[in-house]
Length: 622
Image 1 (cartoon, rainbow, N blue to C red):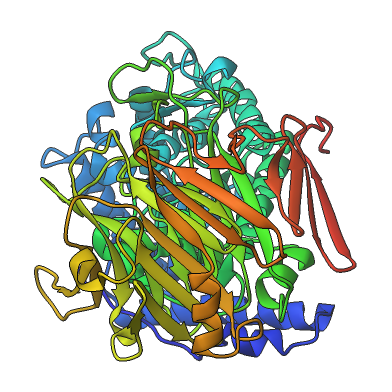
Image 2: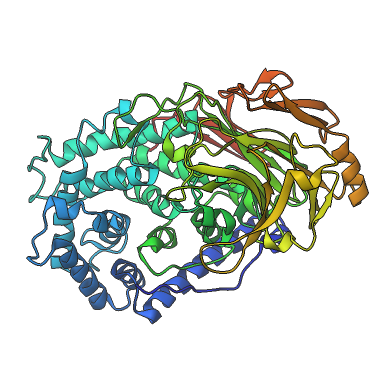
């Protein structure tokens, strides 16, 4: 499979912040986005290789080489059908088809004979083959029982698999429900395609409402954005239900507003999950960031395989971000530091194997980001007694990112044992610019918890009084092992290169020498602490230690308030000023830019004078 990258003129976030926050700036961002899409198509066609559906979508969208495009689709269908060229439900539901279904569907809905978009670009035999594929895919993936409203917080496999399986089955059956060849045929559960579609319409309308009411996605994974976003774009564009289309459009607005708030220069900060150890070190391969930058006219990208089909969905879609979301992403400028807190419904109830049955109201997990122009510090706060879904516990990431480079970051990470995946590797408590992190008492497949630094910091660190201090841009960060004696630095930790299995060294680690002690991370600004001595004086004013197995930390925050943090030991929920962190706060989204009260389904996005209210609770969307 050919993999190649198109590199276009990068419009950096720094440059974007100099743009006036007016409609002309946003129009230019949208023009760049469309230009990226045009170059993407041209590059795919010029290359001529890569995944057949990627090529076919580009060729049919531009109306260039349509005969070749149809031939590629025909060949892909025959490859899925097997040597005897007979499509079955098992073959239609196979992984090779499933991972590409967003592309199969997009091609059909854009180009079939009666399409509302570009009708007639599919040749009749190819169109018929896709219709057969869609009916059989629905037979393999869909049941009316699974589409019941009580199941909207049931996640099968993971969120990206759930979306690929089910939303694609919905649109596949919608494509054939009125065709003479399929409308009266019963699926294995005894229901017709139209009965399935009706059930899925209600389900996905409720799905979007529930994510607004109780929190966005369980997993925030650098890997899986590209296997997830295209499905929402397709439902927004192709669902026959006006309610589904409008709620999916609002959900897209919400998900990109959520991304925009704690990103710097196109790199998202804050807590992440399923952040595999290599991905944790390298921002340029975070597909959420790549998709967002393409959509917002910051940077174009192409991975010429089926992993590019979500980018292709955005590039061929009429979807547009509202001005206020572009404003947040491109023009926060020298903003006042703020907290963005959101709830993620990660608590799992009794679930059969392969299915996560979530409890959205049972006290979830709090994602907490402290955002400064100079860095973003973010964490997850949780209850160690709670059974969280594995898709949330796997390879959790929390730490600090800086806007000076895509890999400029510092974060705790446990050694991955076995297959390299960790589960519940660490727990955190955070108040604004201070984060305390400890080994999770129920961690699985985890070795030593160390703190990873990008290799660019190695020549700039200062070690003093138990602290490892780095200045990056106009930010300060201090990191230390909690519990060691200040004058016994050499006995508390050592600095080791983080040597990957192959390739160059990307960073180094603060590696505790004994046990799995907690660590503290403290951020500040050069505008507040001008010199190293000023910052060190601030750090040494903090009090910390281990009391009855718990890590304790007392400091004065950047607003002048004294704060006490406690974490670990026999403490299931961390304490701030002696009180447990509220894991089901009043607001499901809470920041100066994005706010919503739990359960309301009404979300307000604002920046300066711009304001957008997304009312998911409305049922009349015509």
